[in-house]
Amino acid sequence: MKTNYYISLALTNLLRRKRASIVNILMITISLTILLLTTTLNSSLSKYIDEYLYNSLDYRTLIINTFKLQPNVKETIVNIVNSDDNIVEFNEELFGIVTEVNSIETLNTESDSKSNFKKLILKSRKNQYENIVVAGEFFDTTDVNVGIIPKKFYPDTTFQIDYSKEKVDFIDGESLIGKTITLKYFARDYSSNEMSIIKEFSYSFKVVGVYDIVPNHFYPYNVIIPFNDLKEIYTNIEQHNIGLAEDFNISYSVIVDNQKNVENVITKLNNKGFVVNRAAVLGPIGEISKYILYSGNILGLIILITSLINLTLTMIQSMKKRTGEIGLMKAIGYNNQNLTIIASFEAVIIGIISFIISCIILLGFIVFFRWGIANYGSMYVQAIKVRTNLSLILQTAIISIIVPLLGSIYAMRYAIKISPKVALSKGRENN
Image (cartoon, rainbow, N blue to C red; front, side, top):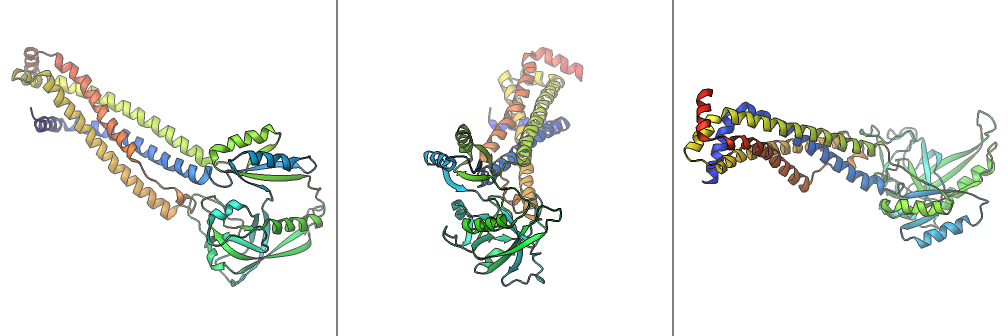
């Protein structure tokens, strides 16, 4: 018997039972769609987390806090660094310091509407920062009064990283290359609640390049300057502050080449008695990703199992109602194999239709999600690339065929056991 004949019979049988067929298709479609959507979203978030969070500079940077009077601290750390190929950089750590903006060359601090010109945070140079410079140039360790600023520049420390689109007008940092930014910072009297200013200092730097803040989740007000410049700023403040205890701590930082090697480096440093912390840790987005995967997969599997049970019961009920038809088919020469093949084609058709509908819904979801991210997502969220993969599509296609086939095979066990004589007599009774 030709394949097209089997397909024709299967389609005829499904069309005769439109309501039951639609219910079965709908149940399987819902379960497949949930599995496709949650797995696609989870894989997209996981890739984003791996590329933009786990392997960001701050996530791979370890901060080691030590006492200044502790002997041979730096030498011990250097020995560990030199013996571990996974550590790519070692520095004395100077934490970012907040400064007020005094002036930005070519921009009017009083009338320019693009910026409030409030505050910047100065960070010290690290060799790894050279990899994120997108225009201009990086500066050498011997350079002074130079800096690199964000490509999307916003000198206001009230800015917060968020999921939704930023409602601020960024300054194009590239337009400021070659220009001078002048800042001011203060020494204060911390012995009183007023924390009055004792002395005001000025610091100017020439913008020599700009960097991309997105890959490492830096803020648009983070400016990178030479280590010695920042050290001098710290010294000026410490020498003139009143009311603060002497700083007995000194911190160092090491940068690891890949996040998968971070834990091993932490263990080595801990074994030498050092207190080590990551410069950055993964926020709630990691838990969100896991929640989407687990809840989606559980819900999808529950609906898929429900679909299988419903499909099996429906097909068994259908077989009972079609007893006379089965008996007649057996009487005119159809054997059990022919009947099984017809039922299998019915199941495959249900699965294929469900799979196609699920893929169409997935495609619509991807288009909608990309549109939403592009138009409403923050510049950090826009790094999320929502896409599916061929292996997921193939796995879903297999599931869409196997589930209805299992139901049809179980139901056909009932039809196969019926003899033509009994089937015809029951068919007359049903009529």
